[in-house]
Length: 355
Image 1 (cartoon, rainbow, N blue to C red):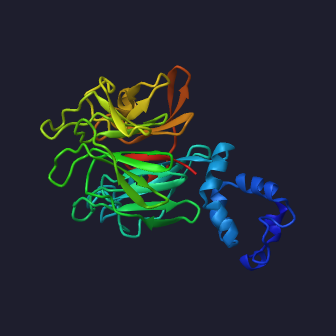
Image 2: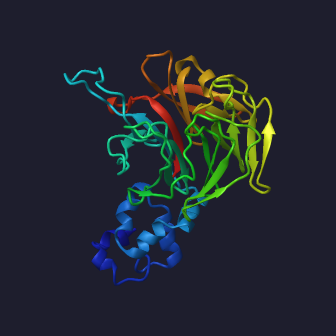
Image 3: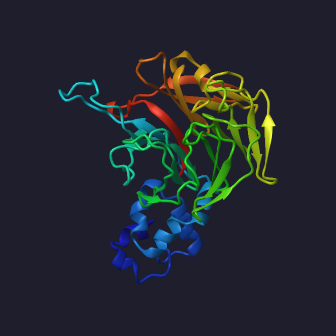
Protein backbone atom coordinates (compact mmCIF):
# COMPACT_ATOMS: atom_id res chain seq x y z
CA UNK A 1 0.00 0.00 0.00
CA UNK A 2 3.07 2.27 -0.07
CA UNK A 3 2.04 3.43 -3.55
CA UNK A 4 -1.06 5.10 -2.07
CA UNK A 5 1.20 7.28 0.09
CA UNK A 6 3.70 8.19 -2.62
CA UNK A 7 1.07 9.45 -5.07
CA UNK A 8 0.29 12.90 -3.70
CA UNK A 9 -2.23 14.31 -6.20
CA UNK A 10 -4.45 13.50 -9.21
CA UNK A 11 -1.85 15.26 -11.38
CA UNK A 12 0.84 12.87 -10.18
CA UNK A 13 -1.37 9.91 -11.02
CA UNK A 14 -2.46 11.07 -14.47
CA UNK A 15 0.76 9.84 -16.11
CA UNK A 16 0.20 6.22 -15.01
CA UNK A 17 -1.98 3.61 -16.68
CA UNK A 18 -1.32 0.99 -14.00
CA UNK A 19 -3.70 0.85 -11.06
CA UNK A 20 -0.76 1.13 -8.65
CA UNK A 21 2.64 1.83 -10.26
CA UNK A 22 5.13 -0.97 -9.74
CA UNK A 23 2.55 -3.61 -8.77
CA UNK A 24 1.08 -6.34 -10.98
CA UNK A 25 -2.55 -5.59 -11.85
CA UNK A 26 -3.96 -8.51 -9.85
CA UNK A 27 -2.09 -7.54 -6.69
CA UNK A 28 -3.14 -3.91 -7.11
CA UNK A 29 -6.76 -5.04 -7.43
CA UNK A 30 -6.40 -7.04 -4.23
CA UNK A 31 -5.23 -3.87 -2.47
CA UNK A 32 -8.27 -1.97 -3.71
CA UNK A 33 -10.57 -4.81 -2.68
CA UNK A 34 -9.34 -4.49 0.90
CA UNK A 35 -9.60 -0.71 1.00
CA UNK A 36 -12.20 0.33 3.66
CA UNK A 37 -15.33 1.79 2.10
CA UNK A 38 -14.83 4.97 4.15
CA UNK A 39 -11.72 5.64 2.02
CA UNK A 40 -13.43 5.14 -1.34
CA UNK A 41 -14.52 8.75 -1.74
CA UNK A 42 -10.97 10.08 -1.47
CA UNK A 43 -9.47 7.29 -3.58
CA UNK A 44 -12.06 7.82 -6.34
CA UNK A 45 -10.85 11.41 -6.76
CA UNK A 46 -7.23 10.42 -7.45
CA UNK A 47 -7.77 9.64 -11.12
CA UNK A 48 -10.48 8.62 -13.56
CA UNK A 49 -9.49 4.96 -13.61
CA UNK A 50 -9.64 4.66 -9.83
CA UNK A 51 -13.03 6.37 -9.81
CA UNK A 52 -14.43 4.08 -12.50
CA UNK A 53 -13.09 1.01 -10.71
CA UNK A 54 -14.49 1.91 -7.28
CA UNK A 55 -17.93 2.74 -8.68
CA UNK A 56 -18.10 -0.26 -11.02
CA UNK A 57 -20.48 -3.18 -10.72
CA UNK A 58 -17.73 -5.77 -11.16
CA UNK A 59 -15.66 -4.28 -8.33
CA UNK A 60 -18.67 -4.32 -5.99
CA UNK A 61 -19.34 -8.02 -6.63
CA UNK A 62 -15.64 -8.84 -6.27
CA UNK A 63 -15.66 -7.24 -2.80
CA UNK A 64 -18.87 -9.09 -1.95
CA UNK A 65 -17.57 -12.48 -3.08
CA UNK A 66 -14.32 -12.08 -1.16
CA UNK A 67 -16.09 -10.91 2.01
CA UNK A 68 -14.85 -7.31 2.05
CA UNK A 69 -18.18 -5.52 1.76
CA UNK A 70 -19.47 -3.74 4.82
CA UNK A 71 -23.06 -3.93 6.08
CA UNK A 72 -24.62 -0.78 7.48
CA UNK A 73 -28.15 0.04 8.60
CA UNK A 74 -29.73 3.08 6.94
CA UNK A 75 -32.70 4.50 8.83
CA UNK A 76 -35.40 7.04 8.02
CA UNK A 77 -35.25 8.81 11.37
CA UNK A 78 -36.88 11.86 12.95
CA UNK A 79 -34.45 14.76 13.23
CA UNK A 80 -34.01 16.53 16.57
CA UNK A 81 -36.29 19.55 16.93
CA UNK A 82 -36.07 22.19 19.65
CA UNK A 83 -38.77 24.58 20.75
CA UNK A 84 -38.39 28.33 20.40
CA UNK A 85 -37.23 28.49 24.02
CA UNK A 86 -34.61 25.78 23.46
CA UNK A 87 -36.54 23.04 25.24
CA UNK A 88 -37.48 19.61 24.00
CA UNK A 89 -41.12 20.28 23.13
CA UNK A 90 -41.27 20.57 19.31
CA UNK A 91 -42.86 23.57 17.63
CA UNK A 92 -43.75 21.68 14.43
CA UNK A 93 -44.16 18.08 13.21
CA UNK A 94 -40.88 16.19 12.95
CA UNK A 95 -38.89 16.14 9.74
CA UNK A 96 -36.89 13.08 8.72
CA UNK A 97 -33.35 12.41 7.56
CA UNK A 98 -31.27 9.30 6.92
CA UNK A 99 -29.04 7.99 9.70
CA UNK A 100 -26.39 5.32 9.14
CA UNK A 101 -25.36 2.84 11.84
CA UNK A 102 -22.12 0.88 11.45
CA UNK A 103 -22.58 -2.35 13.39
CA UNK A 104 -18.82 -3.07 13.44
CA UNK A 105 -17.57 0.22 14.87
CA UNK A 106 -20.99 0.98 16.42
CA UNK A 107 -20.79 4.54 15.17
CA UNK A 108 -23.52 6.76 13.77
CA UNK A 109 -23.57 9.37 11.04
CA UNK A 110 -26.20 11.26 9.05
CA UNK A 111 -25.88 11.51 5.30
CA UNK A 112 -26.52 14.69 3.34
CA UNK A 113 -30.15 15.61 2.62
CA UNK A 114 -31.68 14.92 -0.77
CA UNK A 115 -31.16 18.21 -2.69
CA UNK A 116 -34.84 18.38 -3.69
CA UNK A 117 -35.90 18.03 -0.04
CA UNK A 118 -33.26 19.91 2.00
CA UNK A 119 -35.52 20.34 5.05
CA UNK A 120 -36.74 16.76 5.39
CA UNK A 121 -37.45 13.60 3.41
CA UNK A 122 -40.84 12.75 1.89
CA UNK A 123 -42.93 11.25 4.68
CA UNK A 124 -43.29 7.46 4.61
CA UNK A 125 -40.74 7.14 1.79
CA UNK A 126 -39.27 3.70 1.10
CA UNK A 127 -35.61 2.79 1.52
CA UNK A 128 -33.86 -0.13 -0.11
CA UNK A 129 -30.44 -0.77 -1.64
CA UNK A 130 -28.83 -2.03 -4.82
CA UNK A 131 -25.20 -3.03 -5.33
CA UNK A 132 -23.92 -0.90 -2.47
CA UNK A 133 -26.08 2.12 -3.25
CA UNK A 134 -29.02 3.45 -1.25
CA UNK A 135 -32.32 3.86 -3.12
CA UNK A 136 -35.09 6.14 -1.83
CA UNK A 137 -38.49 6.30 -3.50
CA UNK A 138 -42.03 7.55 -3.07
CA UNK A 139 -43.60 9.00 0.05
CA UNK A 140 -45.51 12.22 0.65
CA UNK A 141 -44.26 15.73 0.01
CA UNK A 142 -43.35 17.03 3.51
CA UNK A 143 -45.09 20.37 2.87
CA UNK A 144 -48.22 19.48 0.84
CA UNK A 145 -48.58 15.82 1.93
CA UNK A 146 -49.22 14.94 -1.72
CA UNK A 147 -47.83 11.56 -2.87
CA UNK A 148 -44.68 11.81 -4.97
CA UNK A 149 -43.10 9.55 -7.60
CA UNK A 150 -39.52 10.62 -6.91
CA UNK A 151 -36.60 8.18 -7.01
CA UNK A 152 -33.16 9.07 -5.64
CA UNK A 153 -29.96 6.99 -5.54
CA UNK A 154 -27.16 7.70 -3.05
CA UNK A 155 -23.62 6.59 -3.91
CA UNK A 156 -21.44 6.02 -0.83
CA UNK A 157 -18.30 6.40 -2.95
CA UNK A 158 -19.06 9.92 -4.19
CA UNK A 159 -21.29 10.78 -1.20
CA UNK A 160 -23.79 12.30 -3.60
CA UNK A 161 -27.46 11.86 -4.53
CA UNK A 162 -28.62 11.32 -8.10
CA UNK A 163 -32.25 11.59 -9.17
CA UNK A 164 -33.55 8.55 -11.02
CA UNK A 165 -36.52 8.00 -13.30
CA UNK A 166 -39.84 8.62 -11.55
CA UNK A 167 -41.98 5.73 -10.40
CA UNK A 168 -44.59 4.88 -13.09
CA UNK A 169 -47.44 5.97 -10.79
CA UNK A 170 -48.01 7.49 -7.37
CA UNK A 171 -48.40 4.91 -4.63
CA UNK A 172 -48.03 4.98 -0.87
CA UNK A 173 -47.28 2.32 1.76
CA UNK A 174 -46.06 -0.21 -0.81
CA UNK A 175 -43.70 -3.16 -0.45
CA UNK A 176 -40.14 -2.89 -1.79
CA UNK A 177 -37.10 -5.16 -1.95
CA UNK A 178 -33.92 -5.78 -3.94
CA UNK A 179 -32.90 -8.85 -5.94
CA UNK A 180 -30.05 -9.16 -8.45
CA UNK A 181 -29.49 -5.40 -8.56
CA UNK A 182 -33.15 -4.58 -9.25
CA UNK A 183 -35.75 -3.00 -6.98
CA UNK A 184 -39.19 -4.65 -6.83
CA UNK A 185 -42.25 -2.69 -5.67
CA UNK A 186 -45.79 -3.97 -5.20
CA UNK A 187 -49.08 -3.09 -3.54
CA UNK A 188 -49.76 0.03 -1.49
CA UNK A 189 -52.55 2.45 -2.38
CA UNK A 190 -53.14 5.15 -5.02
CA UNK A 191 -54.18 8.81 -4.74
CA UNK A 192 -57.78 7.80 -3.99
CA UNK A 193 -56.78 5.38 -1.19
CA UNK A 194 -57.59 2.37 -3.37
CA UNK A 195 -55.46 -0.64 -2.47
CA UNK A 196 -53.26 -1.89 -5.31
CA UNK A 197 -52.27 -5.30 -6.63
CA UNK A 198 -49.94 -3.94 -9.34
CA UNK A 199 -46.17 -4.42 -9.27
CA UNK A 200 -43.12 -2.98 -11.04
CA UNK A 201 -39.37 -3.56 -11.12
CA UNK A 202 -36.70 -0.84 -11.32
CA UNK A 203 -33.29 -1.49 -12.91
CA UNK A 204 -31.08 0.95 -11.01
CA UNK A 205 -28.12 0.95 -13.40
CA UNK A 206 -30.28 1.33 -16.52
CA UNK A 207 -32.67 3.69 -14.76
CA UNK A 208 -35.63 1.83 -16.27
CA UNK A 209 -39.00 0.62 -14.96
CA UNK A 210 -40.79 -2.53 -16.20
CA UNK A 211 -44.28 -3.69 -15.29
CA UNK A 212 -44.79 -7.10 -13.65
CA UNK A 213 -47.86 -9.30 -13.48
CA UNK A 214 -50.40 -8.37 -10.82
CA UNK A 215 -50.62 -10.09 -7.47
CA UNK A 216 -53.74 -12.13 -6.77
CA UNK A 217 -54.87 -9.68 -4.04
CA UNK A 218 -54.82 -5.97 -3.29
CA UNK A 219 -52.33 -5.30 -0.48
CA UNK A 220 -52.17 -1.90 1.19
CA UNK A 221 -49.64 -1.29 4.01
CA UNK A 222 -47.82 -4.50 3.10
CA UNK A 223 -44.14 -5.24 3.65
CA UNK A 224 -41.52 -6.41 1.17
CA UNK A 225 -39.06 -9.13 2.21
CA UNK A 226 -36.43 -10.99 0.19
CA UNK A 227 -36.14 -14.67 1.07
CA UNK A 228 -33.48 -16.51 -0.91
CA UNK A 229 -34.15 -15.70 -4.56
CA UNK A 230 -37.78 -14.66 -4.07
CA UNK A 231 -39.45 -11.31 -3.40
CA UNK A 232 -42.25 -11.65 -0.84
CA UNK A 233 -45.10 -9.21 -0.21
CA UNK A 234 -46.37 -9.82 3.31
CA UNK A 235 -49.92 -9.19 4.57
CA UNK A 236 -51.69 -5.90 3.85
CA UNK A 237 -55.41 -5.36 3.27
CA UNK A 238 -57.85 -4.58 0.45
CA UNK A 239 -59.77 -1.38 -0.30
CA UNK A 240 -62.93 -2.58 1.39
CA UNK A 241 -61.22 -3.89 4.54
CA UNK A 242 -59.21 -0.91 5.82
CA UNK A 243 -56.88 -1.99 8.61
CA UNK A 244 -57.92 -5.65 8.43
CA UNK A 245 -54.49 -7.15 7.94
CA UNK A 246 -54.53 -10.58 6.33
CA UNK A 247 -52.25 -13.49 7.20
CA UNK A 248 -51.40 -14.41 3.63
CA UNK A 249 -48.40 -13.35 1.56
CA UNK A 250 -47.36 -13.60 -2.08
CA UNK A 251 -43.94 -14.52 -3.45
CA UNK A 252 -42.62 -13.64 -6.88
CA UNK A 253 -40.81 -16.34 -8.87
CA UNK A 254 -38.25 -14.45 -10.97
CA UNK A 255 -37.98 -17.31 -13.44
CA UNK A 256 -41.65 -17.47 -14.39
CA UNK A 257 -42.69 -13.96 -13.35
CA UNK A 258 -45.63 -15.45 -11.47
CA UNK A 259 -46.89 -14.74 -7.98
CA UNK A 260 -47.49 -17.61 -5.58
CA UNK A 261 -49.97 -17.06 -2.77
CA UNK A 262 -48.91 -18.39 0.66
CA UNK A 263 -51.74 -18.70 3.19
CA UNK A 264 -51.08 -18.30 6.93
CA UNK A 265 -47.60 -16.90 6.25
CA UNK A 266 -48.03 -13.97 8.67
CA UNK A 267 -49.10 -15.32 12.04
CA UNK A 268 -50.58 -12.12 13.46
CA UNK A 269 -53.20 -9.51 12.64
CA UNK A 270 -50.73 -6.67 13.22
CA UNK A 271 -49.38 -4.33 10.57
CA UNK A 272 -46.20 -5.85 9.08
CA UNK A 273 -44.54 -2.54 8.22
CA UNK A 274 -40.82 -2.58 9.13
CA UNK A 275 -41.14 -5.44 11.63
CA UNK A 276 -41.14 -8.64 9.52
CA UNK A 277 -38.42 -11.10 10.46
CA UNK A 278 -37.38 -14.38 8.85
CA UNK A 279 -36.47 -17.19 11.23
CA UNK A 280 -33.80 -19.85 10.70
CA UNK A 281 -36.61 -22.16 9.57
CA UNK A 282 -37.59 -19.70 6.85
CA UNK A 283 -40.86 -18.78 8.55
CA UNK A 284 -41.99 -15.20 9.04
CA UNK A 285 -42.40 -13.65 12.48
CA UNK A 286 -43.06 -10.20 13.95
CA UNK A 287 -40.20 -8.42 15.71
CA UNK A 288 -42.84 -6.35 17.51
CA UNK A 289 -43.83 -9.53 19.39
CA UNK A 290 -40.28 -10.64 20.13
CA UNK A 291 -39.78 -8.50 23.25
CA UNK A 292 -41.94 -6.00 25.21
CA UNK A 293 -39.16 -3.39 24.91
CA UNK A 294 -39.98 -2.92 21.20
CA UNK A 295 -43.70 -3.64 21.22
CA UNK A 296 -44.59 -0.20 19.82
CA UNK A 297 -43.17 1.12 16.55
CA UNK A 298 -40.75 -1.76 16.06
CA UNK A 299 -38.33 -1.47 13.14
CA UNK A 300 -35.80 -4.18 12.32
CA UNK A 301 -32.86 -4.11 9.90
CA UNK A 302 -31.18 -7.45 9.16
CA UNK A 303 -27.38 -7.07 9.13
CA UNK A 304 -26.54 -10.75 8.66
CA UNK A 305 -25.32 -12.18 11.96
CA UNK A 306 -26.95 -9.26 13.76
CA UNK A 307 -30.22 -7.37 13.57
CA UNK A 308 -30.60 -3.73 14.54
CA UNK A 309 -33.92 -3.38 16.34
CA UNK A 310 -35.62 -0.17 17.47
CA UNK A 311 -38.91 0.53 19.18
CA UNK A 312 -40.63 1.56 22.41
CA UNK A 313 -42.12 -0.31 25.35
CA UNK A 314 -45.34 1.72 25.20
CA UNK A 315 -46.85 4.68 23.37
CA UNK A 316 -44.84 7.78 24.25
CA UNK A 317 -41.94 5.86 25.81
CA UNK A 318 -38.35 6.71 24.80
CA UNK A 319 -37.04 5.01 21.69
CA UNK A 320 -34.82 2.02 22.44
CA UNK A 321 -31.98 0.76 20.23
CA UNK A 322 -30.79 -2.83 20.36
CA UNK A 323 -28.61 -5.36 18.58
CA UNK A 324 -29.82 -8.95 18.41
CA UNK A 325 -27.47 -11.79 17.56
CA UNK A 326 -29.12 -14.38 15.35
CA UNK A 327 -28.21 -17.65 17.01
CA UNK A 328 -28.80 -21.05 15.49
CA UNK A 329 -32.37 -22.16 16.08
CA UNK A 330 -33.44 -19.11 18.06
CA UNK A 331 -33.18 -15.35 18.26
CA UNK A 332 -30.61 -13.98 20.67
CA UNK A 333 -31.29 -11.62 23.53
CA UNK A 334 -31.60 -7.88 23.02
CA UNK A 335 -28.37 -5.99 23.68
CA UNK A 336 -29.08 -2.32 24.33
CA UNK A 337 -26.70 0.04 22.55
CA UNK A 338 -25.81 3.57 23.57
CA UNK A 339 -26.96 6.25 21.14
CA UNK A 340 -26.15 9.96 21.16
CA UNK A 341 -28.97 12.47 21.58
CA UNK A 342 -28.80 13.38 17.89
CA UNK A 343 -29.82 9.84 16.88
CA UNK A 344 -32.55 9.11 19.42
CA UNK A 345 -35.43 10.08 17.11
CA UNK A 346 -38.25 7.77 16.06
CA UNK A 347 -37.25 5.35 13.28
CA UNK A 348 -39.90 5.14 10.58
CA UNK A 349 -38.24 2.49 8.41
CA UNK A 350 -34.84 1.21 7.37
CA UNK A 351 -32.78 -1.14 5.24
CA UNK A 352 -29.37 -2.78 5.10
CA UNK A 353 -26.82 -1.49 2.60
CA UNK A 354 -23.91 -3.79 1.80
CA UNK A 355 -21.27 -1.26 0.77
